[in-house]
Image (cartoon, rainbow, N blue to C red):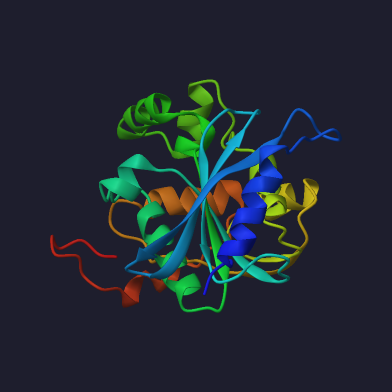
Length: 236
């Protein structure tokens, strides 16, 4: 069972008049909620609006997380090439599926789907970064050549999304210590971290190695020797 429908109605009513006098620069509102049966279990989908980046972010909620403590949460940034097309250049789709499967087996949890394509640089610049990587640069170097930091994402909106759902504290599914620090900076209480490691394939191993070596991600890439085969002969 998810958030009870009576509580959903109250949340929507609460957000109709929602204001953020303390932090008016980042005001997040729940605009719609509905049941969403999925192949990963019973979820509810929550549509958010905000005045910061003015993008429509989403939460996929499993179980009743309202007023919850130690709620399992995955912050997943949009990746069109990975999530929708199954690109092997990254591990995004596998992380999304793994998160939905894990949380679907729990009593409750949330996957926040954030519209921060390409670590926040946007789709076109992400493809430009791919071009530079094809020429030999790693992901950090490609972003810097384009005039960006290695990671342009900010999790202030995500923190407010959790607050809108009245989540008290979370256990976060991530390998990225910077994500933990940024959420805590925005007031999220994090009581634990759950790793979300995906074995590398032949195409994304350099990408994952760069995340480990240059961005501090907590990854054990040696697990690649125990992998399954993809249908096309590459490894997962």
